[in-house]
Length: 95
Picture 1 (cartoon, helix red, strand yellow):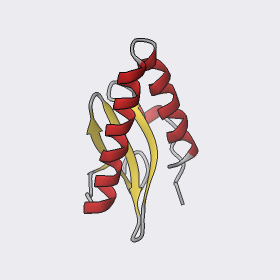
Picture 2 (cartoon, helix red, strand yellow):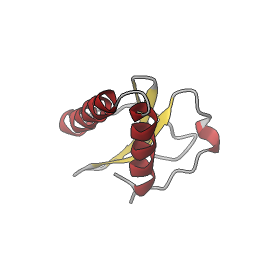
Picture 3 (cartoon, helix red, strand yellow):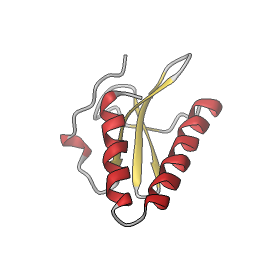
């Protein structure tokens, strides 16, 4: 995961944990499993080339996982709320 994605996950965890530490951990466990699934099945996701060439997206529980797929790995660049304007977000190439 890119540093920005790790920061996103920490923020998501803090936000959910304000209500329930259990649900915060459960959400991150499910999200991690979804990322592993993307890598395992080589899921192509929805192209988001208008944001960054090669960027893919997969919605997940009111969030969106933004990643790039390579022959040997995927790199998660961001995990953002679905209501966020991603046009204005910064995306590192993840190379």
